[in-house]
Structures are given as structure tokens and as C-alpha cells.
Image 1 (cartoon, rainbow, N blue to C red):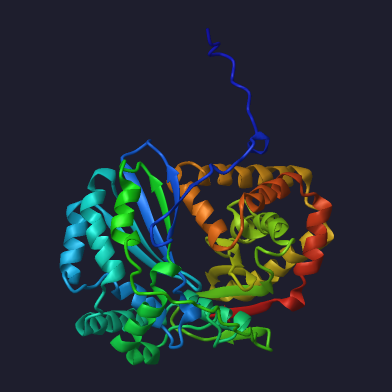
Image 2 (cartoon, helix red, strand yellow):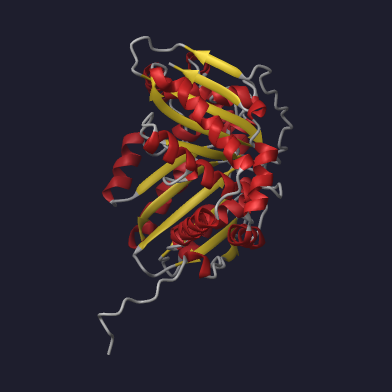
Length: 427
């Protein structure tokens, strides 16, 4: 009999052995790879198609995002309204996203409705017509949204800090503009679509409770033909041209009560051996609610509701970005405290108690990210799209469990030097 008066033993997250559930790999008849994580916990599934169709590949600004968005807004058989009504009728959700390197289309639905939804999903992917009236609505909406956002200090700060880090003509630093939206033409969108959204550039990621004939249905709708033909893409080599100046102050809203603070620097991406270690150091510094930055600038000083340090993890390069919004009168003081915390990590070893807390937090977060098929397939997607495997995942876990305070202090001395950071305040 269980003794209800005795608490069960507490087990730290770092004591768990983490592993990625292996995926199944299928090849459709036309060669499209399908990566599958099965689960019978719920009667739902997630079907995601990924293409190398991000802003990296566009020759005209905003074409990649506009193409990705408008593919869903009309085919030769259905209007945008009919597509949306059909998807909503089955309680499904068809989402699209465009990033720097890749663009995606993702279907979430009940497993029993898969056969009814795949035909319209096929149309969206293989038969978009990009109606002129839909482009006009898109341009109008995006310009209105941009006009509103440009009044927000945090939005302006995000645009400028990326330009400083990567250069205003690089995809990582290029920003939207009224002129770019006005220049969009349906011919450009159709050309970009025909080049990037082809069968031989497609990868499929599938997770959930799958119908017994799921692979056969995928073959019928996506694997039976060489849709859009072959397109052999060369990843363009684009130079990064960071700004020469390091300090910036921008006046954006004279009636605003708070400003946006950004402190950022370039940093190697996930392929560099220091990257897994920096994930730990960044978490201590500003990567979770109990971080140094939060304890000092939010809890102690009361300058902000929240402050975070984020690691950019792009394919070509990366960066570290410390971002917050604070009262106009304490923005400069916030900068001072940020630099104090950077320096403290260089001069003082992280106490073992704090390091243990962060280890458990990070391992616990990974455990949460592996809870369910949808989360697991996202982990695999990030590895596969970046030409990595499970060894990379295991190396990151091992680093979290074993990194020492001395290693972290050395890392801070290398990457946390004040003169390497760009600083920006927008008020």
C-alpha cells in the first residue's frame, strides 16, 4: 500500500536520458521524401510541406512572402472564400509561413477528414492562380499594417537592429516598405512560385494518428506526377555587410511613454562548436524568466516588464539580440545594467546552484518539447532541413548536462565584450 504521508522522491530533469523518437521515411513515386512520426493519442494529424522558397531566394523584395501568402487565395477551381469555407467546414486549419530560407504550408485536421481535405490542399500547392484582386487586397492590408507598426518603437527597433547586424540588402536585414509592396506584380509571384514550389524541392513532414492509407493518399495527390517540373536551385552566396557604427538613437514617437532597447552582436550559428555552450550561457544571462537580466532589470530596478536575450540561428550565420521595452527616462540606465551583467559573467564564475537550476530548466524544456508527435516532428524537421542528425541533438543535451562554470566564463570573455555589440534605443 502506498504511504500517502511520505512524499515521493524528487528526480531532477538532468537525471533523465533524452532521445528523439526515430522517424519513418517514405519516398513517394516522384521521389518526394516523407518523414513520419506516428501517434495514436489523439485523432488528429499534422501535414507540413516545406520548400526552399524564403526571402533568401527572391530577387525582388517581399515577393517570397507575398507568393507564400497568396497561394491559398484562389485556384483555377476555387476562390479564396471557397477554400477557406471548405477548410473551416471540416474544422481544419491550413497555415502558411515564409521564413528566410524556407516556406511552409501546414494542414492540421482530424484524421477522419484527411481524405476530404487533401484534394483542396493539392490545389493550393499545385494550382494557385494569384488573382489580381487578391494581390490588391494583400498590398492594401500589408501597407496599412506597416503604417500602424511603424508608429511602434519596438517594431522600428527590430527592423533597424537586423539591418545593422547583417546589412540592409541581405535577406536577414532586408525589411518591408511601402515601395516594395506597391512594386509587387502577379507575374513576379507566378514566376517565383514556378521556380521554387516544385516537386523535387519539396519535403513532407507528417505526424499524428494517420489513416491506414495515408501514404497512398499522399502518393495520389503529391507523388503521382512531376508537378511544376524540376527546378535545380543554387543557394546564392550573399555577403553580410554589417554597419560600421555601433551606437544608434532614433526618435520615433514624441508622445510615447516608453522606448525600445536593443543590444546585439553577430555570433556563429548552430554549426560552430561554441553554439551549444552559448545556449546555456544565454539562458543564464537572459533566456528565461529567472535570468540575470530579468532579476536585475525587471525585479530589482523595475525598469521593464520583461527583458530577454535571444540567439538568432540562421543557416548562414547567427547573432545574439538582447531586447526590451522600458520607460523613456530609464532606457539609458537599462543599457548600463545590461553591460554590467555582461561584464559580471566575464569576471565571476556562475555559482553551481544557479548552473544546476538552469540545467534542469533547459532539460525540462526539452522534455516538454518532446511531448507528443507534433513536437517531435518539429525537432526532426529542424535537424533535417539543416543537414543534421540525432547526434547533434544528443551533443546539445550532453553539453547542457556537463558544461562547467569555467567554460561559461571563458565563453563570456570571448563573446560578451561590450565593444562587439551594436546598441540601439528607439523612443
